[in-house]
Amino acid sequence: MSTKSSIEWTETTWNPVTGCTKISHGCKFCYADRMARRLQAMGLEKYRNGFAVTIHPSALKDPLTWKKPRLVFVNSMSDLFHEDVPLSFIQSVFKTMNEASQHTFQVLTKRPSRVLEIENNLDWSPNIWLGTSIESQRWQFRLQELNKINAEVKFLSLEPLIGPLPDIPVKGIDWVIVGGESGPGARPMEPDWVREIRDVCLQEEIPFFFKQWGGVFKKRAGRILDGRTWDQMPAVKLPAS
Image 1 (cartoon, rainbow, N blue to C red):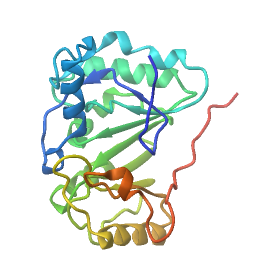
Image 2: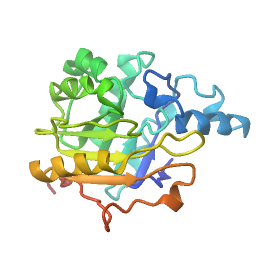
Image 3: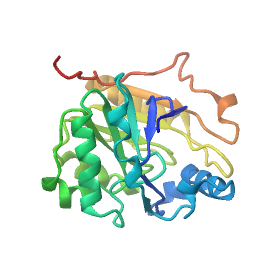
Image 4: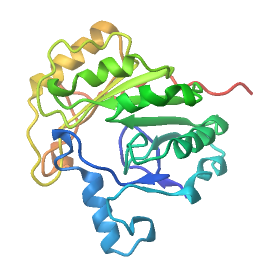
């Protein structure tokens, strides 16, 4: 099953795993937690366990049925590298991504330390991008862990940005996404935090993507930064025909 995404930096979401646990203060108002519980209340079978980690073997082959190349956000409702997801299942997800070479898979994790533990058991084909989330300086160590991993394209999701990241060392990273927190209880993001990151990306010639200002009414706040949108992305490598 394909799910067209409203997330600005992808096209499709694919969730062979749902559910997660909160491990850092950026998780406080997790949209996936709210959505999973809402879908559970609506009676959707896939979310029968709410936000508890649940694997879905029946979803493993879905990308193989999509012929047109897509940007695919893997596990928008979970974290593929959660400690409760068995290595064997992660390997099955990677096998599908390896085989579906027409697509580009965007895997985002708050657990790059687990990736380091198991990455030698995974096949990092060029169409698998790996990113990590950093919401404030307290979690910047995730960048050092990401840098040690063998993914060909590595990216940062600085969202929800709830603190400044002065002089974040982005050299060697292929893409940087920044966004403010949205929804009930959203914590504010200072414009100068965003500008500082953008300017570092421009200096290092790294694609910069500004997703949103966020807030309780995120659509009203929009995503314009200094008079324009910032939708830069790495080049997508298509398989040889």
